[in-house]
Image (tube, rainbow, N blue to C red; front, side):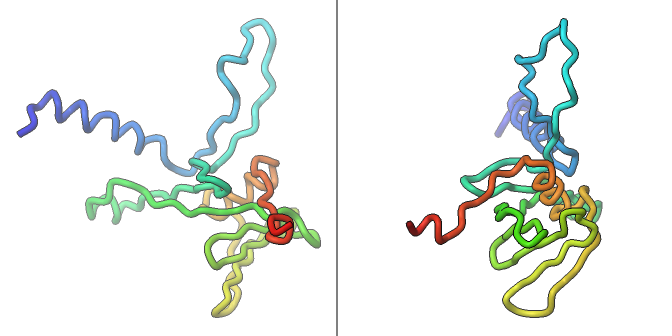
Length: 150
């Protein structure tokens, strides 16, 4: 049986990790590079929580129902940035393709099965956060399969 001090030491760091998850953009600036004598321009902020290889991971927020049901950890969606083609920003995730015009008001989700789905762009949504990052130059373009095959 764990004593109370050991149990608290294990639980406390996990709660810090969970508190940092969410849809708030994270700063990309290196704090050590900031100077006390020169004003620092506002640094771009990104919504992705992590990068796994060539995929950007975006955290789903926990609903009150999920919290009440005992869910303590969030799930993630992974996106690859495919660049801009024909005036549309393109992301892929599993078997979905997501596109948005350059002014990104409506996100279109296409899957190999079923009709296209459309949703309003909102940077606080999972897909909206990914498009926000793409529009602000925070995602590296994933190479096309043709380029990889050469």
